[in-house]
Amino acid sequence: MVDVNVTPFEIEVRTRHGDLVRADVYLPKGVSGAVPVLLGASPYQKALRHLPVHWVFPFIEYGPMQLYLDAGYAYVAMDVPGTGRSEGTWDPVAREEGEAIHDMIEHVAAQTWSSGNVGMIGMSYYCWSQWNAARTRPPSLKCIGAYDGATDMYRDWMYHGGIPTLGFLNSWLFGSVLLQHQAQGLPIAGQGRGQVIYDIYEHMFDDEWQRRRSPYWELDQVDIPVLSIGAWGKASLHLRGNFTGFEKVRGPKQLLVVGANSFAEAQTYYFDEAFHRAELLPWYDHHLKGEANGVMERPAVRYMMQGAHEERSAEDWPPTDVTVSEFFLNAEHSGVVQSLNDGSLTKDAPDTDGGATSWQYPDPLWMAGVTMMRPDGMPDHVARVVTYTTPPFESEREFTGQGMLHLFASSDQANMDFMAKVSLMPAGDSEQPYVKITQGWLRASRREEDSDLTTDMRPFHKHQRDEPIKPGTVYALRVELMPMSVLVRRGERLRLEISNTESAITEAPMSHWYGQKVGTDTYHHDALHPSRLRLHERPTQDYSNRSGDQS
Image (cartoon, rainbow, N blue to C red):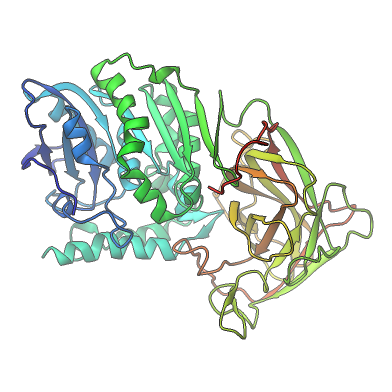
């Protein structure tokens, strides 16, 4: 159980919107006078803080409270409007919710037990609340520690590449919010909680409704200190937001990316007290207590490389010393993967014989998304997808920064979906990847880019309208891939997988709506259509004396 050695008391504040919102206050024992405050806000009910940290309770995201109480902080646990003990209508990450948190921050800062210096804490939805409150600029909010949280709700998780997410939205809304309220004797869909899923799917474009729920568009007004912490294993949900949040804010800022490689690991990582003592506690101590502890002398960017248990640093993201490496799609067989085509990734652009790859869907052997079940009962996640694989690398290479898939494609249908994934394959002929490096998504009808926000290595798609494609016409499409860092050792390979859906086993809970797709898509890779995988590459360091542990 998650125990603390103090009994909380409840406070309430009437927000500018007229809602009475409530929070529990935990004060540190043995500390006299006013203390700095850490505030966490979510719809997960402050009454449920007794539950243990475990993947079966994915909504336990507030961090090691006792550690901060022992360090002399007050901890304020807030139910956002329309959830738990707070009145109003629940409208997730809407600007109005951020304003309610703003009002609670200012109320807390004025209390006699508060020093007036407030920071925010927590992961996932708690991190959304940090970005959301910060964009409203509460005067008493002095810093945030934003661990694992999206900023652009449309692009980061609701509609990857314009494709509706399905699995996570349903499991999160019902499993973490609605049913948890029912279990506490509250109406399962009361105070607007049941309306959320309809609103999200009704607003299929990045319209004004969506943008009011995306702090991204206002983060350039945030000038308080921001520590943005991402986890490589959350590429399909929060990772992009930690990078764009770091990019957009204008105050003192740092970016840290940890090696947690799964949703569950990111949660347990956040409750590790040693991690907080090393990273977040010094951040709060400096900005809320004024301690001169050297935290601002740390590099602006630190990241754990996948494929090697090694941390590197930089002064910006992407690191300023990166170059762009290209791997061209080719019909020639790699000889190491049993997939629909077993294509190759080559360093040279294809000649006129580079060919094309066509495939039909839905595949008759798909069982769980793209996964096929082998005769021995074991799942095979690549046999029924299109793949392109590099030859074994001849030396160590570090790929760190942005990635992009530049794909020439056609279809006999009026639309195409693309789900691309890059994996690191072990040396030898094993078909199973052991590190997923990056992934991306795009619906062809959403291919229009915003020229003001697009860069050479990161297309920014508008998602303002649908532009159907003409059957048989070849289109040049640019698929944004999530930020990445991997060390590829001698003998290892990179593999690109492309399909129009994903494995319900490997990608859970972030599955997407398949829809009514029946047809044939073709990926072109000849001299006129040089489809290619583009990755940022950084000069390697000397790893010769290191063990090569996988992270």
